[in-house]
Amino acid sequence: MKNKNAAKKVTSGIIAIFVLAICLFATTIALVWEAVSVKDNLFITGRVKLNLNDGKPVIQENEYLFEPGMRVAKDFFLENLSGCPVYYRLYFSDIGGGLADELEITVLNGDTVLYSGKITELTKDKVAAADDAIEAGERREFSILFHYPKESGNPPAEKHVTFTLCAEGVQTINNPDKLF
Image (cartoon, rainbow, N blue to C red; front, side, top):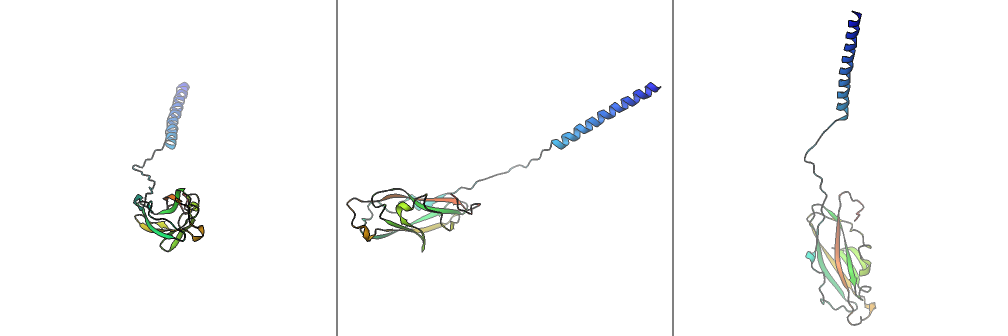
């Protein structure tokens, strides 16, 4: 009888160990294996799109023959076609010709001077963003004043300047330093 009781105790102990092992395994899986899901997440980056004067030149070829002391004002616009406000900067590229170091340029936003200097000083790497932003859908009017100083004297024949007027924009959101 002792053997029967001992065998029964051993069998009960083995069954208890087996049941506890299954419970431990199930608890471990429950602790390690957790899955949660949230459907239909969407992350979108903003898109900056600008319209600079409908792609038309600010000054036409052969529109003016600059003479010493001459001043010319030309208007153009910048439109924010983005869905968010943007910081912007206006600059000149592809600058060429003998008048490039003589013509004085002033870019105005109303009565506010945005940039002023020789056209060769108003390039992408030398101008900063304007102080204000253009709101989504806003169209802003600007003027460029061209001045050929009297002290430059009469230019030799065929002296000219060529340039591309450029605009660049960047989102204002999360960009307090106006980084491009």
